[in-house]
Image (cartoon, rainbow, N blue to C red; front, top):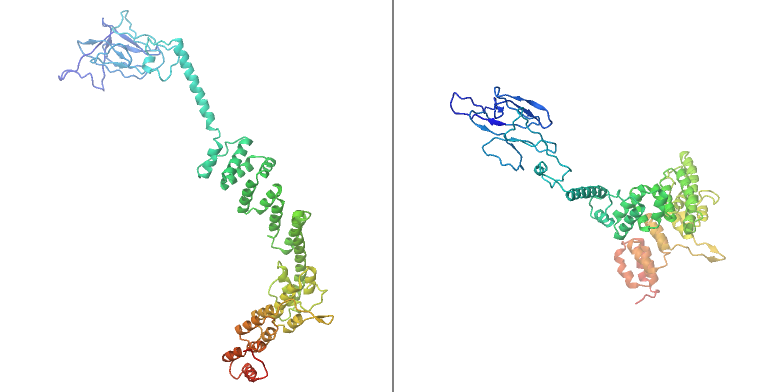
Length: 515
């Protein structure tokens, strides 16, 4: 089969066959007969006659560019990159896309053979890898030996194994130390890849060895989420450091109830009991708080030897809360009805939730002279809660001084006689003077109780500081300090009672002054 091409001419009378709008080509045999074009699937594309000069295009979409020209005949050249046959640079060629399917040739209706023929089929007996070029794969003389095929199959199997290993390693857990370091450095990490219990425990132990609190807390929470509760509790109890960090985390979250429950099951009964007690104190209703503290004492403190001392105090607190509720109910009713002792004054505060000393002060202030059988009696309160006499005297003195009940104060401070012996007061008068000064007691009351101070130097210093001149003069007289009296004359107002007293002492020759 030959391709006759008539070259385009620059003359106006010649038709331009290379116009893309009117492509023309004549396919014919050497003897001028029609040619049939067969595509690569074996289907006939059509007949090309020399009269219509149409351009034949294969079903694969390959573009075949031809020219028709008079007097020039050249063979069709189908070019492959790896073709052994050299291509004429001047001749047009048809380029077929490489593919692994069988190739076809252009069959001629004439019995004679074409000028250039293409093999009917080029096949590969086995698949080829990427190392084998596509051009070499379509060569007709490409043959693979049994050894080469075996190598190819072995290489494919190796690649499959590497792919499967890569897929498995994608979800494989990294080294524990690497994960801990990433956690410490603040980098992204994942704990979900650690599935087995030994891996999780190794993760926690490694975090404890690194002494990183944030990592320990994060891993403990991961174990809490992924383990059964009994396993989590058992393993965590073996690691006290992890329990400490877990407790701090729950405390920072403000979940006191969960913290108390977790500490209880983790074997830290003392801490759990204290957190339960703190939880009970959060109640704001007096009756509810009383019941909560009482229940907490019975369940978490009572019968536990290590908490025996705390149990005693909690029992006393429950008794005090009960007594406060009883006194408050009576006083609230008396205050509403304007009955004594609230006929001319209003209560400053309610009695709920007050400490024992403050409760005693309240009773001394409003119920100082009631009988001891009364619930609000200070003496009954002191007796019930085993308070010391010093606590009672100090608290009662403050209550009497603040209300300016000087008679009650004097009764309280008067020494009692027992078998004709005078009993010394349990509180020094220097403390009483301090109470009177804070209560802004009158000058004569300060003078009276300052003279009862036993420490002479402290009495003189206190009297000079608060300008109680009578006490200063009397103290200097007792010390027989003539020079001190003479120097103190400038501090005393001229013509006052203290000035007259001072002049009388200086003129008294019977006193033996210290030189």
